[in-house]
Image (tube, rainbow, N blue to C red; front, side, top):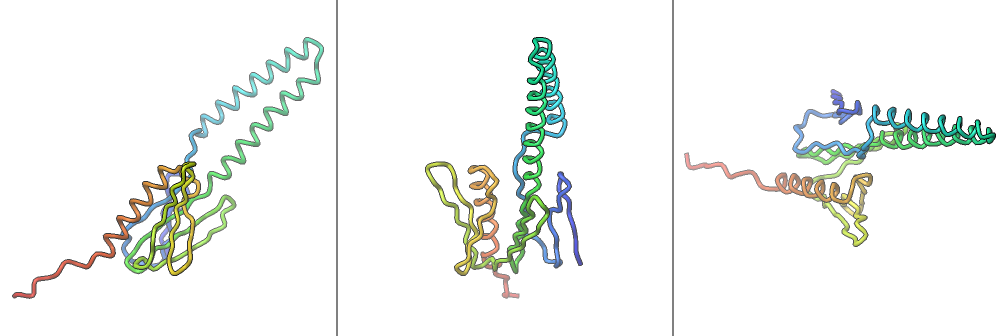
Length: 180
């Protein structure tokens, strides 16, 4: 049975092949500070300024400059579209009692999946002086870097949350009283 869950951006949050209860479920997405309406407002302002400056240069007799202002606006538009395309990447991390599954969807929609046995899994975070830390999942000699698009503080917070969930999973169940 497959269950699909959509996050607030319309991305598939997780695909579940089993009915195991989730102990930890997270969707990691890159932060984008400019909303769609903000993008349209910014592009309208850029086009208006470019058009006004192009008209002014045309009246001064430098009509070829008008085309360069249009080219500038077009290049800014293309740069933002490329940036928004890269924002489509996301990763889902799901922890159950049997495994930790990482699903990465890149900007073109290609899906990659990794699965780890949680009892042997180690969460490593490299702290460097340049604030460019790496968050890695390591098990049985294999490593996977996750959350590379997150800020260093977000990676650190996520590592702590995942380590806490793994710690809770590894704890033995409370002893039941057999005195009765």
